[in-house]
Length: 348
Ligand SMILES: NC(=O)c1ccc[n+]([C@@H]2O[C@H](COP(=O)([O-])OP(=O)(O)OC[C@H]3O[C@@H](n4cnc5c(N)ncnc54)[C@H](OP(=O)(O)O)[C@@H]3O)[C@@H](O)[C@H]2O)c1
Image (tube, rainbow, N blue to C red):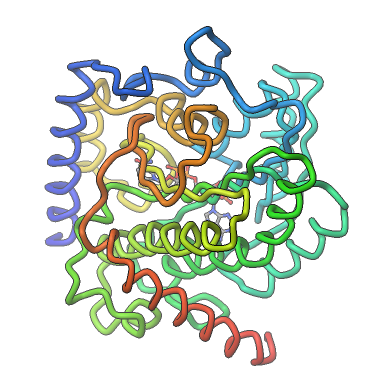
């Protein structure tokens, strides 16, 4: 109950802040704002142009529902070839059919993945790489909120395993393909980590690697916030490394806004449902929730922009902890070491 009240209070604060901006309806320097939809931000106009979509291939994780499904729909509509990694291929087939109903020319490839499993991520990457496709965009969008403490098959807390570790591994195994594609095509590659404003709730003293893997006192909201902070730190560190090697690939993090999607299904209940019912007109719609990702992925305005955090289709500020370069580097080193040891263990 205490956990639910804390969650609801947090949501209420975020919703109030979002609401003021949303109601003001003011567009930022990009020309877009909190109420822009993914469709609007990817329309060619005299003031904004896009990457050459018909030459692009994108991997969008978590495209079987919510923000990811809308991201995939819009990118496909603009002509991008979409690869959907999914743990439920039946659901992915339904999304594919739905997209192709609207965009019959859309090329959509479905492959299996369970992001909470390092072995599964590795399998997905070998399968994808064996297809010989280029890779221009990697959208690390899938996400999970877990009310109860659960562990992945690699013995890592499930939220952290899914939201952070799986995407970390995916990025590691696909990075060279992206660098190669960018060098070959001359089109800048882009990696996007879908994070959340909730990352700013994490206090430095509570952000400890061993506790992220195996928390003593589990709290679903804290675990989710920490995984979203890790997404930004990952973004910062890889962006720094890509710059250092002069690679034509950028990496940015986004906060999509508060959208009533499957991610909050763990919070079902009368109180939660009532709060969402009362504020429903003020939350973002799913097309609005997918706009920042689509903007950062396709706009020419974000060419060369890397290591940044975006919200409402504009560059925004993340927390001081998320901006801490030494924290980002340490987390990267600890994660690499963990993956090495976990993958040495036989997978049961
Ligand atoms: N909604 C919001 O208010 C909000 C706010 C801030 C940030 N975000 C972020 O936005 C992103 C998208 O969330 P959403 O709101 O669209 O949630 P959603 O509707 O629940 O979608 C989550 C997606 O992630 C996939 N997924 C979960 N666990 C997976 C796993 N182990 N392996 C592979 N795929 C997995 C789900 O696949 P299945 O279909 O198989 O379940 C689904 O496609 C998340 O990163 C979330 O943290 C959302």
